[in-house]
Image 1 (cartoon, one colour):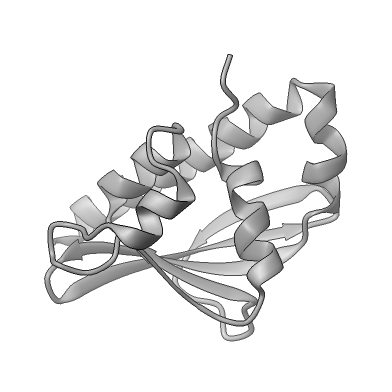
Image 2 (cartoon, rainbow, N blue to C red):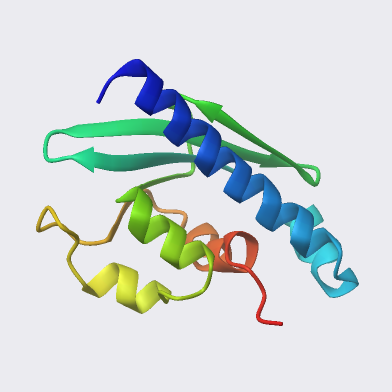
Length: 132
């Protein structure tokens, strides 16, 4: 994957995450959850058999920032195929589906490291679009 493709992938995922958070902010019942969630999460986008593009999500005081690269100090590390991550974010794939099924590379669709299981469980409430 060349630099232009990496940049496009980053901008796409960033726009998706920012859009979901903006959409959730429109519903008052999500305000407390969005404002109280705090975490530093590395997200690996498994783009090729031997290549993972890293981005990070920092949530603090109700502000969400998506950036490139990994964070040294993190609460959670996720690795997912970008296509599977998109299906997860739009609600087509559940957390169980992501954790139990395999992706096109033969790995689990969602792999994680870290001991912040509460943040892992709260993540779908932050990153998955609400059903309308």
